[in-house]
Amino acid sequence: MGKFYVTTPIYYVTAKPHIGHAYTTVIADILARWHRLKGEKVFFLTGTDEHGGKVEKYAADAGKSPKEFVDDVANSYKFAWDSLNISYDKFIRTTDKEHEVAVQRFANLIWDNGDIYKSKYEGWYCLPDETFIPDSEITDEKCPYCGRPVQRLQEDAFFFSLSRYREPLLRVFDENKTFLMPKSRYNEILNRLNDELKDLDITRKSVKWGIQFPPSPDHTIYVWFDALLNYISALGWPDGENFKEFWPADVHVVGKEIAWFHSVIWPAMLLAGDISLPKAVLSHGWWTVDGKKMSKSLGNVVDPMDIIKRYSEDAFRYFLIKEKPIWEDGDFSEKALVSRINGELVADLGNLVSRVLTLASRYKGEIAGDIDLENADIDKISSLFDSFDVTGALEEVWKFIRSVNKYINDKEPWKLEGAELGRVLNNSLEAIRVIAILLEPFMPASAVKIREQLGVRETKFSDIKLSTFNGSVKRGENLFKKYD
Ligand code: MSP
Image 1 (cartoon, rainbow, N blue to C red):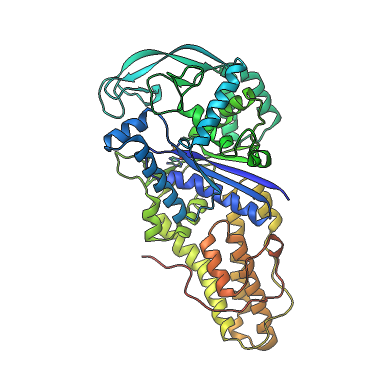
Image 2 (image 1 turned 135 degrees about the horizontal axis):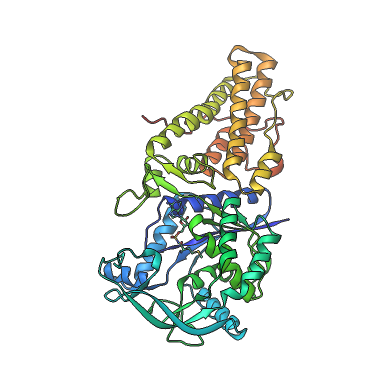
């Protein structure tokens, strides 16, 4: 039996879950569910990234202690993921004791190996907020949080000898051409890696809300260095059973903006710690909203809870995956969502299930007969999943749904009777049973509803094949609602 370890990034607690976080998480969930369906042992990890100067500031602004603040946000993530039917196996928080211990252990390990040295960090500093701010977030020498002027400051910091790993990383990219997907991102990161690789400052003296750096406890560990280690600390690195069973990760699902951290910095850290590398990093594109970049100031941040309440978790999941190839950027709008619900979920899938079940529940004869409908192309779907192309896989499932609709339109079962009707009903019900299995990774709630109406039990991978129907039909309510 195979194993499959899939992760999402751990999300910053400085924002509530939005469509971007939901997107990454849904992709990972679909992969996890597919591999469970295949009978593999799956570990699906998600969580929250809770340290750093920003968190201290946000907590103070909210009149809370950092701990109270991060607890609240972590809960809002858990609530959102439950509402979206995310089947994670573990929710890690970087404030978990076991994580903090693992990070310190790792820092000590590479300190002892001579991969960390002391030097000076220079950057933009906001005095009132007491925070260093990355160059990329500064415009007009103003703090992006409070708008007040920033100044150039220096402080002591410890550095990770990232540059030492440039050659080994180039080898990794050369030996594994799908180490980072898609190809365009692979090329982009490889070019950057070919250019230069600077050492990375990994401690902050000015940040208190963080994990102490053991060799010099007046420093805390830089959030990214802390955060990336979640992927192994969650498994109980170095001695945990889960670490032995599930590491290396089969895939880290991340957005394009953090591909560098996951395909360069993280592998370098692992090389420094003599730990094997993940098999793949999958970096997806971004969503704009109604054609604009999503931002707090524009007030167009899409809250998944809001969409789930007004439509359904499955409509939202379906839209996210179907609307654009995962590698590319795309636009979210309610108009587009409604159009997919009406034109595909209701018209293709909902109607198929309701018309077949209506006919079948009226029919008193035997439901059986030869199969004269082509099976779904499981090999193709599997190979699309192997290359993490969940959009392609869903499209392939939809092709099958459309072919079943065509079969019914051609056969016109409402005009048939006797054995011929029994045969067409058998094939249509079987097709719907197969559809329910194939849809489970994408729309788990709808898959359950279909199964209940068919009166069939939960199924295995080997059941994805048209055969003789042995459920007991109970026509239920429509799967999806039409919207204006
Ligand atoms: N805390 C870091 C990750 C550390 S992992 C060791 C972080 N967190 S985050 O809260 O910013 O979430 C990042 C994830 O959200 C990425 O996968 C990113 O692509 C996703 N998205 C955030 N906004 C997005 C869009 N507008 N569209 C699609 N996804 C985007 O980075």
